[in-house]
Image 1 (cartoon, rainbow, N blue to C red):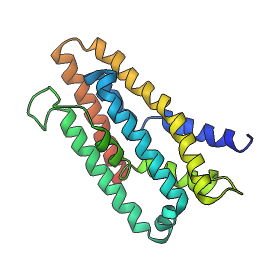
Image 2 (spheres, rainbow, N blue to C red):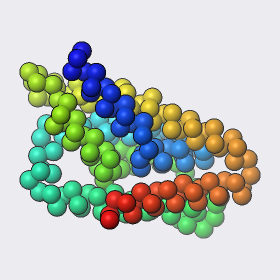
Image 3 (cartoon, rainbow, N blue to C red):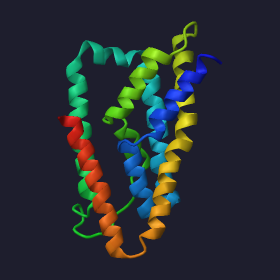
Length: 194
């Protein structure tokens, strides 16, 4: 239990604080409601759990051996965030309505280029994988704890978006909100590549 408390606390902090996933979920919640955002929520937690599991089994060692890989992922993640920002501001369709929410698959695959997800996975693998467990069992335990804690944390961001969406009763407010969220994603993207 003494080893699980720091692991759970770390997962809580990483899942609850702002980052690309949570900005995307807030915008999606405001635009599509909780039900429309649920596939993205599930994609994020499942993709993150799979990423953590594979990293705990040794993928994280590749980042240590080949630091260029980290740079490539950071740039790819920044480019994806810029695409999302463009999409949110209506650039993808030339109007204020968004075509559809982020899917389960898109959200899960986004974890592969999300730098915050990689930081979380590598830290979980290097600091919190339990000693004395079979590697696969330890990786599974860490991944499942991350999933169990992450699900309600990121759901809160989507629900925050739903609450904001109720305030955005007209198209003008919706466009302004989407522009702000798109701008936040663009700033995150630029911070990643500097």
